[in-house]
Length: 378
Ligand SMILES: [Zn+2]
Image (cartoon, rainbow, N blue to C red; front, side, top):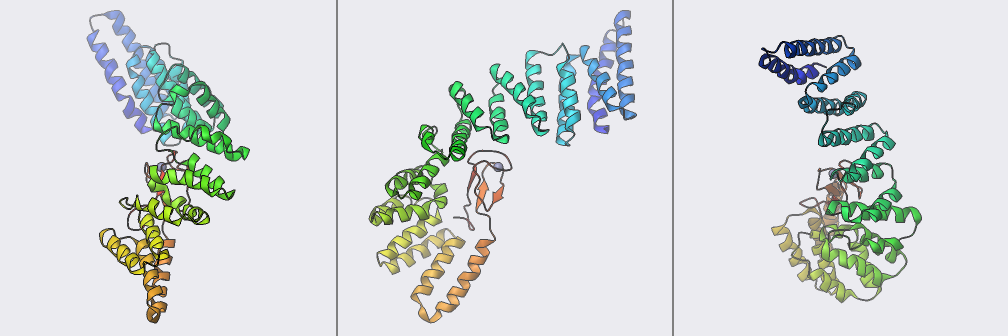
């Protein structure tokens, strides 16, 4: 509670200034003396740990100076960060009762209060505030509202909001969010038909096409699988590790290995080591053993990578029967090392995981978890 007192020092200073300025005016002087008394009373309550009464007293002083609203907002944010949500809510709710707030200040307080409610699990109240703010064209309210529907798995409400306010979903992150709501709804309904509506919402969108490719693959429709995953490979090569093995199988099932080889060839300049490994596998399938080995060796010189190294060991063990056992044992150790590593990393907050998430469990960004790159990555 000590930090509260520090936060309110500027308020006290402001009142002192007002009092000095109005020294000649007895009426103003008397009024200011009352403020100082009320302020002291508020501080005393706080020091005596009667915090509710202390806050009410201090917030009552806002009637005199609306300039102190920012101090109370800072105070409430401090409470929220410490997990003292009941106090944060109390400050925000008291602020809202204050008549002197400008519209912008009121919107700010409502937005902050919605965040308190969300953290406290009071989702209905948070939704009410955010829907109201969205109706006032508050630019942050829509993102927060979608976050709320994500938290409550209320995909239908999110989709209904998109259908009624499509033009408001005007950022890449909002478009990805609503596309992923459609994906969740499709899983829930076990029906992926609606996904075609959103596949092209934004250029860098991944999940709807990934899911449609997966469905086609599971149904044995390999041509469709190639269509969806092939398009993903062209537009978002970083996600290749989540489907590349099955894309290769799809081409094989249709006896289109040459097409796969030329498709991979278009992406050899990307950073993906996995694509280069697949390219080597295609060379091996064409009995170009030495070419494959030379290629992966050159790649590793320029771009050291543990998975590429493991693949090279495997190639060497296949070609060197006399030391095959030794090389295989080394490769097993490398594989054990790889197994300890995370596979995905959020490019927004840095969260790492062995499991793929479409909504980052840490920062809630959408499609921000990407297969890991670098020495230990793909
Ligand atoms: Zn994150």
